[in-house]
Image 1 (cartoon, one colour):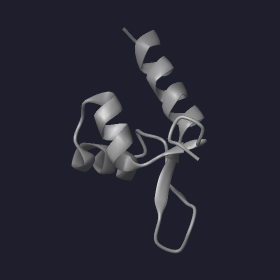
Image 2 (cartoon, rainbow, N blue to C red):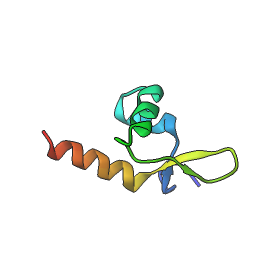
Image 3 (spheres, one colour):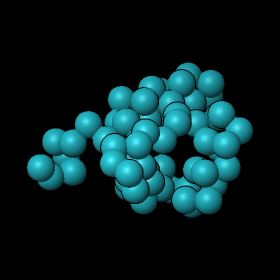
Image 4 (cartoon, rainbow, N blue to C red):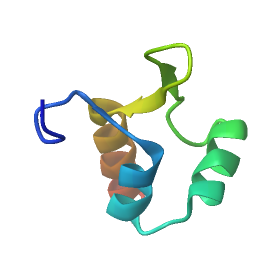
Length: 63
């Protein structure tokens, strides 16, 4: 399954999409200002695409 068809994104993909660092994303998650990570295996954490899109849409409406 290629990345376009997956319902989730890695933290690196989110970082590249938003233009913010991985450490900034982790800081926002910790402060509950960003969608939470989801565990999809014992060692893999991802973000759900729909939650990232909702976060982006909410940020745009604040402008």
